[in-house]
Image 1 (cartoon, helix red, strand yellow):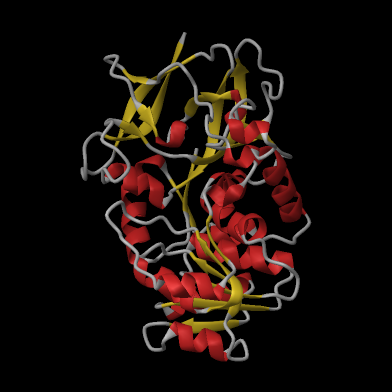
Image 2 (cartoon, rainbow, N blue to C red; image 1 turned 120 degrees about the horizontal axis):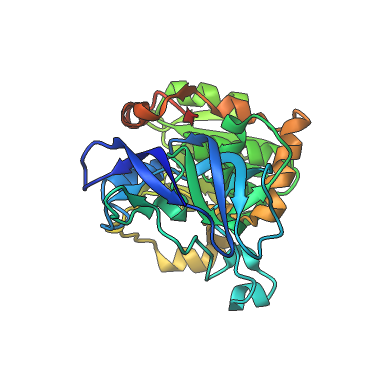
Length: 360
């Protein structure tokens, strides 16, 4: 049996998205059918639409989502009908070399649903990050469903991608220690989540860097103790001045451009850590003095999905949200309907929103 649902599709490179009826099959072995309640509009969805990730059109967009399991296939025991879940794109296999060495957050063979969702004429759809959640229902591998206590889905779903990337960059990849100084370059949703993560970790000084005073003011609400407008001020000099002339213990680049990475590299203290969490374009190149890489010591790291393990991190972060220690609601700028995704992309470009969230 197939389910007819409305969904947002990217038909071709650079073309506006469309809302169409698609067919979602019942779950097979190891799969789960999820009724989506909310899904955030992430930059990754825009990258899919622009052809920056691949050319496997048509794409079924959406991946930053929460909802309720409607049905599961044979062999699924971790979740069942009625469970509230956050969808994730790291359904660990348990068998690859990363999983076997006890580092499943690096899993090299993550699972997706085997069956395909399709257009009504049978054309197969490529779901964004193996999820495809700009849809009333979606089919995923059961391991892509992380059961958590029922909370506001608009907020919880954001842990499925952008917020987890930022929080995890601070909490998992760096990881930030109590009393350390932290600088975050780029104060969009991911950067602000990194700031919130640094505060949770007990950082002593958190420096927010951006070119937009509106974003810097918002960064203070998430825990930034100091702000630097890098349009007017050299951020490396400013960060050094704010850290006794030494540089920050941890610098997180939430932009992902050669210029910002070089700033992060030169703004860290000796033996400090740089974390790249902003996603670079495929054609970007980086040039650094190799002697400085050697002489400054420390660590240069990249953070892919916040080095998260969903089964470990999502419940913990939802608990912090329920305790009032992590304000996920503050990341939800607006809630929108399914047919407003294209407008949400425009607002994202202009910096008007942290997150627009589709609510079903």
